[in-house]
Image (cartoon, rainbow, N blue to C red; front, side, top):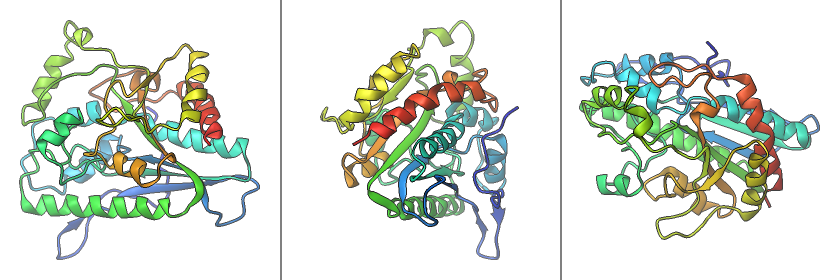
Amino acid sequence: MTHAPTLDPAAGPASPAGPAGPVLDPVLDVHVVPGADAPAGAPLDLLIEIPHGATATADFTAVAALLTSALPESLVDFFHVNTDAGAPELGLAVAQAFVAAEPHRTAAVARCRVPRTFIDCNRRLDATADDFKAGKVTPGLPPWISTAQDRQLLRDAYDRYLAAVAALVTRLTASGKTLLLHSYAPRTVDVEVDDQIVKSLRHAYQPEIEPTWPLRPELDVIGRGPDGKDHTPPSVMAVLRPAMAELGLTVADSATYPLHPSTVAWSHVMDRPGRALCLEVRRDLLADPFAPFHEMNIGAAKVERLTGALVLALRAWT
């Protein structure tokens, strides 16, 4: 099985630290990819953020071992259904191809190591349940995180992750780009996020039921806000759509989710208008095969197939 790449060779699993209690470390991996002609320490031309980048079973078990909350049985099944398998591999491939095409550029990949099963680093934690429903997204802190110790542990990790990404954004050039990269399951499976989540998902993915759920677009650019205003850079869509069409793939326009204030992605786009883009890639285009309740093998050929078209669009981004 091919695991998601470890972007920082020094990174290790979450571990306890001292009398103050456990600490999640690391909260992210950062891989800086300089072009062959880029000067050392050059500012970033491209930042690829993968906020749901904890994709290995080991990512889940390392954090679960530190928690005191009573977790639902077999919660790791939900982890695998819900995490963005393939996004780390695709992000790294895109960064490498981007600087290979423009050797004077420098790119970086920031991959979150905190499983969204426990806290979602792409959510505003002060958002309400109604906010999350309006955004068609899962909550930032799930109901099974029930102890104050766990909430503090996870909130600390969340804060450190967001601060690290914010620091990377300050390293972007004035025209630098941020790609917020995600992968999503092939179908929209509508189940409640509660203590019965695993049972509900097992039922939803039964062979006779799974095909009845709506099929998601192969790629979806999440750029329209709740008011319908489009925040997607037009130059990106002008290239991305025909480039993916040559591969027989369609690119939707916020068909699955809106760009919503309950997400951190909204803040990225609002803070740097025209310089941040949120993209969902259907997971069966990356996984080989798509297997919802298991750590997925990510096909190198599948990643390579999408990389060229994405790099064309990023290079056209003005």
